[in-house]
Image 1 (cartoon, rainbow, N blue to C red):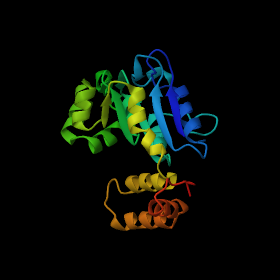
Image 2: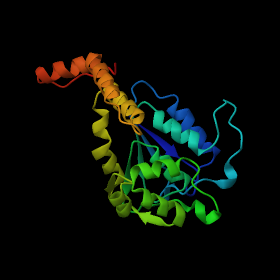
Image 3: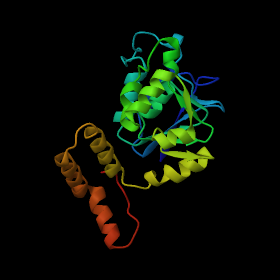
Length: 238
């Protein structure tokens, strides 16, 4: 199952406490049959045009969850299933920081991406200065955060800020997200955990451990059996 989580705060889905709460409530309570999560912006204008500067309260909510974009972005990163950003229109500031926390990004050709915080005498404070240089050349990340300028989807793809540019987001999701939902949930969780754990430092030992965990799992045994028997695998997620 592919679960869509909508960022909704008209007219341009500025990230406020409501959107942060949506991310926490949806990602912390995923059903067992959810294999991939897609983050999308409601409406025609934006994935998210940035943070609602006046919309954040300094404290966490009543459930003790931390406020702000950075903890929510960290939550996206550690969500065990793949999380994909499907971007259209404006994807700026805090909206881009949310997108960068995802496993990969699909952008409509009309998308505009950037970090405008410097125009307010601020800087990206939701992980943007940390994640952008890991995806694109450090000099480009510096220019993007220091200039406050926007880049279009094609430029973002050339730089590596987004992975796929499409003419139709629905078709893009069908092409790039649906195949993930057909894979072993156990293997996908192991891959995501492995990639996160070794993002900053290579570990062959960690990779061997993850491979062994897959090989010994029900899904691993089923996948090998299905291949040998020339049939479709029936995944259990274990």
